[in-house]
Amino acid sequence: MKKKIVLIGAGSAQFGLGSVSDIFHSKILQGSHIVLHDINPDALKMVYEISRKVMVSESLPFTISATTSRKDALKGADFYIISIEVGNRFDLWEQDWKVPLKYGNRQIYGENGGPGGLFHSLRIIPPIIEICRDVERYCPQAYGFNFSNPMSRICLAVKRRFPHLRFIGLCHEITSMPHHLPKILKIPFSELAIKAAGLNHFTVLLEVKYRKSGKDAYPELKRRAVKYFRSYRKGTERSLVLDVFKKFDCLPVSTDSHFGEYIQWAWEIADHKGIKDFYSRYKKSCLAQYSRYLKILKGESQETWWKESTGERITPIIEGILTGSGYEELAVNIPNKGLIENLPEDLVVEVPAKVSRKGVVGVKIGLMPKGIVGLLNNQATVQDLAVEAALTGSRRIALQALLADPVVDSFRNAEKILDAMLRLQKKYLSYIK
Image (cartoon, rainbow, N blue to C red):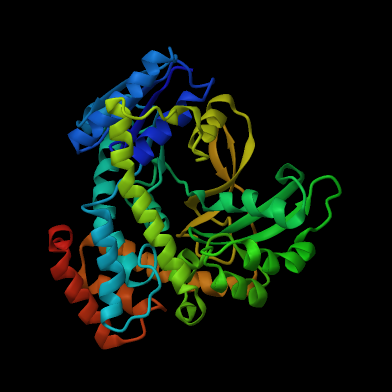
């Protein structure tokens, strides 16, 4: 099917080339035009030239273009995918993480929750709102998919400012379940039916059943999971996750670094070494991407990057919408609207969804366990305030978002953290008054 698919932030080799590779694998999308868009012309050119070289040499049935003009990229688009960051990603991330620690605030990662998650939100929500303003102008019927973090807050901001846009958040954390469950339960994932829900990076596995018999597999999971994860390999940072599993009877989908960002007592039991080791590996891998792909462009490396799928879910979802397949996607981030009954309506939740010509329609979860909902509700107001601060530029609301966050345990230090970060990241946060 000939469609126009726009990749916003395509200068990131990891996102740009990975997404192009996934599209190249799709028979349903053959004939489509892929538009690469980025504000960095040099990075954009590299991704474009590598992609086009493969497309031509392999005679792939697609067309591809690149532009730094968002208007030209979005005009007439059928689908657009956003994966952006603001400024030097790792320098700013480390400020988000370490400055609050300097003031005694014990947050364990600093990307999506706690004080770090607030400042990340305040930086990235405004440019995504600007992107969506152009979407509303040039392709209002297009389906939009967001990969950027903090996922829940970005999606909530877009929902409030542009309620009629078709905007869905996607995160690959759920893929940990197809990876681990077959090993724990000694059965192919295709023979299991699962249901997970919550907030992004704060999702738990609610159900696991054997498809053939309909029998509940959760008792077996409880017997085996702790031993499995403890012997799996070092650096999986699941100390906190396993304690939550034992005390709340629900297995978190993600790891300590993500799940623990939202919990005030996470610092006490999280695997801090595992978290730091993971961050170091991830940073090193991302920083090596540019050199790696530059070698491919120069012909110094013969990597066949386009022959491997990334495992991201965006292409199957687009295919499902176009074909009306009706299949169930394991996790999407969409407005609650009663999907989880004991969470606020005005919240973006992570739930399974049916994918068809009607789009992406969330699966109703009903009531979630009270203990887990207690943790999730602690974040509902924080996310509400963080989004309001980003949309209004209110310093007063930003401070309230910090003071409402369970991870923040000092009134005086909260204001010191806010003042320090507004000075340090003035280039991006000067609109906060």
